[in-house]
Image (cartoon, rainbow, N blue to C red):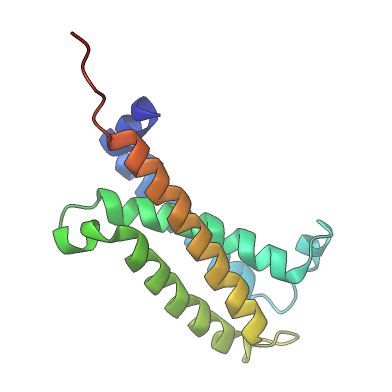
Length: 139
């Protein structure tokens, strides 16, 4: 796990920042389409789709905040900031969908977004803790 963490840290632009930007752009594009019928072929519940989409966003945003060096205060509680930013974005995205044909805003969709962000924050916090834990030396 530590090796994977170090790989991400060393190549954060390629493996964290670029995927975040791409993922977020795709997510915004999909929520801006009048109807995402091609996604409905997956046969997942709407709320599960929201949870999974925002779980992925949360993983990438949590790692981005954790690895960035410009704002050290954000790094201290990267998981909380990630949930905060994604919650705000999810709320704005629901409002944005009011203006898209055949779309609507639902509080339950936002709660699914929030839940995905919260779960991802726990996963990334656990991953970072395990990856950065000092191992006990043997004598």
